[in-house]
Length: 87
View 1 (cartoon, rainbow, N blue to C red):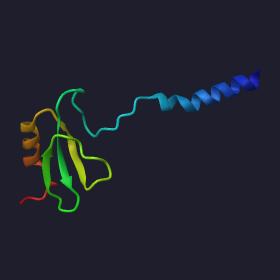
View 2: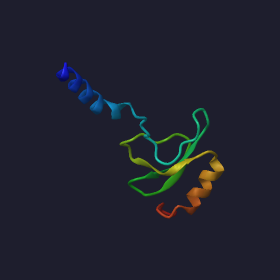
View 3: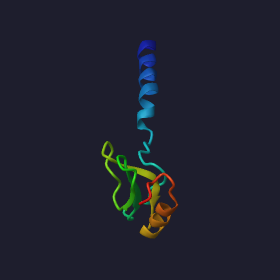
């Protein structure tokens, strides 16, 4: 009986963190269903642009900062971003 109880406690202790909510976004994402805009930077040229879909992980584009609820806010953030190459 003590072995079964100990085994159950050990399993729950290791499995518990896997049930925690995972946050896989950078910054704050808007509520689901809402459109969002991102600053995407080309890792080769360092140029940035506003996109309406989050770039895929492992590609040549990376997200700079957080998601923006409107394109106007994303354009303002793009103008203020210092890591983007200027044309």
